[in-house]
Image 1 (cartoon, one colour):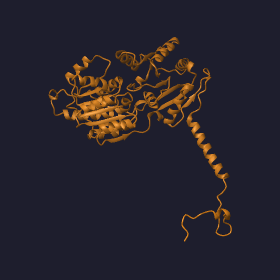
Image 2 (cartoon, one colour):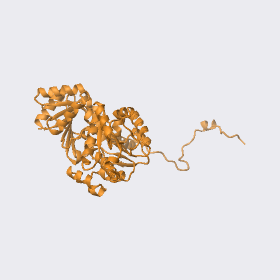
Image 3 (tube, helix red, strand yellow):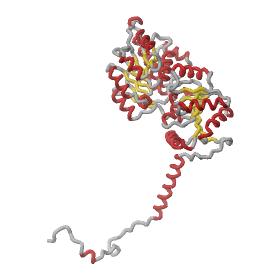
Image 4 (cartoon, one colour):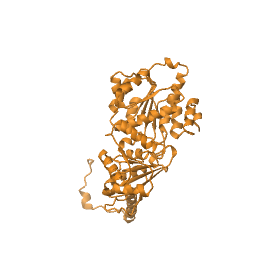
Length: 441
C-alpha cells in the first residue's frame, strides 16, 4: 500500500515524496482512514512506529479540504486543531513534522510551551494559527489571559496520553477539555492503554475506534539489546572503555539524575571523550541548541536525564546507552525507542549493577525474554548480578511439576469397597450411641 491509496491530496503526497517516505507504517495504515472518516480513535502505538504522521497527515488533509473553497484571508484567526503533548521537546518535534508535511499547503502551525517568553507566543496567536501544538500548563496560562479561543476548534489530539497522566497533567487536561466545543473530533495516542488512560478516554471520546499496533517496540528484533554487569564504582570507566573499544561514533546516554549527568560528563572528558548533558536544570534555549548540535553530529555523546526519553526524534541514531536503568519499565521502552526508528536497526546497551536487579527483572518480564549479557575481562565484577527472575520462574515451574508428579506417584490409591462382606465394619459400641435426628415412631 502507498500513501496515495490513503486518499491524501497531491500537495501532501509531494511533501512525503520530498521526505523520502514510500509506504505507510502499520499505525498509519490503520489510523488515517478512520481519521479521514471523522471518527474518534484510541490508538496504542510505541514510539518509532510513525504515529505522529498517523494523525498529522489526515488532520492536514481535512483542513486542506475545508480551506479549498475558502479565501485564505477570510478564514478567521481561530485555532482549528489542538494537539496536546507532555513535553516541550515533543511539542517542537510534532510542530516540525507538521511544517514538513504542510510545506505545500497554506496551513499555519505553532508550538507553544513554557520556559520561554510568552509575549512572542501571544503575537503569533494574534496573527492566527490553524494547528496549535501545546503543553497543558502553558496552554491554560494563555487561556486564562484570553490570548486564545477555542470556539472554532474542530479537532483535539492527545499525544502520549500516558506520559501526560504520569506527569500529573490530568487536572489541566480536564480544565482544557471543559473549554472546548462539544462537537469535535477526538484522537488519543498512547504507548500504553492503562486504566487511567481509559478513564480519560471515557470522559473525552465518544464511541471511539480502538487501534493497537503489535508489541512493544523494545521487543522487536530491529533493536539489538544487550547488557554488561558491572560494579557501580566502575560504571564510568566501563562506559569510556566501550566507547573506545567498540568504536562508538555517537550515543544518547541515559542517566537518572541531573547531578549524575554533570559528573559523568566530567569523568568522560578526563578520559578524553567530549560529551554534553541535557536535563531540566538547563534553560530551554540551551537544551534546544544541544539537541540541534546532537542531531547535526557536532555533539557525539549526549548524557540525558529522562526528560529526553520522549519527544526526541533523531532519524539515524544507532545507539542508546542506559547508564542507569530506569525505575519504570515504560521508561526503558521509550528510552531505547529513540533508536531503531522508522524501520532502521538500532542498538541498546545497559550497564547493570547489583542494585539494579529489581529493575532488570521487571524489564525482562515485560519483554518476555532475557537480555543478552556480555562480559569484559578488564572489568571483573565483585558484586555479582543474579541471573534473571525468568530463569528462576522457569526452574521453579519445572521443579513444582516434578514434585507434583512424584507426590501423585507416592500417594496411596483410594480404597474401593464392593457390596457385601468387604465393607468396613462399624464399631457396634459407638453405633449404639449414635442418635437419629428424627423422633422414633
